Image (cartoon, rainbow, N blue to C red; front, side, top):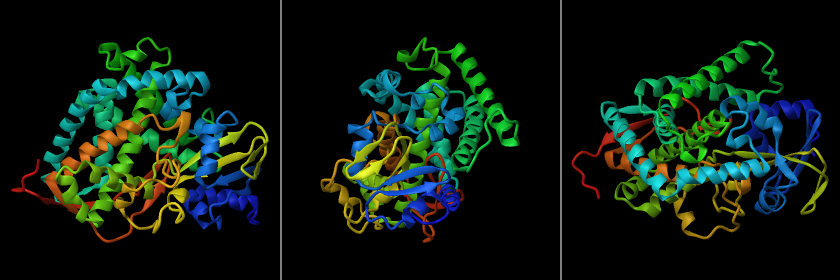
Length: 405
C-alpha cells in the first residue's frame, strides 16, 4: 500500500487518474490503498478483470460514486445507469439498432454526414480534430438514434449536450462535488442544460417518432435518449480523433486505408484504442468480502480496473508504447487483455456502432486527404472517457487525381 497520506492519494488520483495509476510500481499486480476515507483496490491484469466483469459480476457491481455523477448526461434511468434485469432488458432492446437493417440505415446517414464534413474540410488546410470529430459524430448520433435531421435543431441540442457532457466530466474528477440540489454556479448550469435538452427532445419526439421501435412507449424514453446520445458519440468521437492524430504521425498506414484494406483499417483503429482506450478505467464496488485470485477484497471496497495500464503491459503487448497496428494480426494473449469498451454485461452499448462508424469515416477521410501533424506527442485528458486535449490539429493535403475503389 502506498504510504502517502490518504488525502494526498485522493487529490493526486482525482487530478490525474491515468498518471496516478502509471506511477504505481504495480508490475501487473493488484494495489490496495486508501484514497481519502475509502479503500481502493487497483487491478491491472486480464485474469482478475475477467473475474470482476464477467465471472463474479454479481459481487462487483456498478460504482455509484462514479455513475451518480454522470446522471445528468445519461438520464437517471438511462440504459447505462441500469443494473440487473433492467439492464439486460434494455440492452436486449438496443440490439435492434445494431442488427443488419439498422446498420444499413446507419451507413447511409454516416456517409452523408461524412461527405458534408469532407466538403467543408476541403476549404481548409488544417482542422481541430477533436472539435470536428465531435461535431460529426454527434450529428450522426442525433439522426441515427432520434431521427433529428434539422441542422438547426441538431446544432442547438448538440451545443448544449456537449457542454453538459463536459461539466459532468468535471464532476467525475472533482474531489467532492456539491450535490446538485446545492445551487452552485456549475450546478445551476447543469440543471438548466439538462432541462433544456430534455424539453427539446420531448418536443421533437412529439412531432416525429425517431427512436427505435423497441423503445416506443418506454416510460424512461427520454433517459434512454440521453444515453443513446452519450454512448453514440462520446467514445466514437474521441477514439476517431486519437486515430487521426496517430495516422498523421504514422503516414504509411494512410494509403492502406484509402485503398479499402478493411483489415488494415480495423488494425489501425484497434491500435489507437489500445493506446488511448475511451474507458481508461472501469469502476466497481464489492458487495461482500472476496478472495480475488489471491487479492483480499473487503465489502464496500472501490475496485478499479486500469485499462490504460493493462493495454500498455509489455507482458501482453511487446513494445507497448509503439504504434504497431500489425500486432492485431496475432491472437491476443488473453481475451480480456484488450477491452477499450469494457467487457461483460455492462460493456459500452455503442461499441459495435463505434467500430462500424470508424471504418467508414477513416476510409473516406484517407481517400480524400493525406494528413500530417506536428511531431509533438499526443496529449490526453481523462474526463468521463479519455479525450485528446483541445486544439490539436491535423493538416489536410488533397489527394485530388488519385483513384480508389
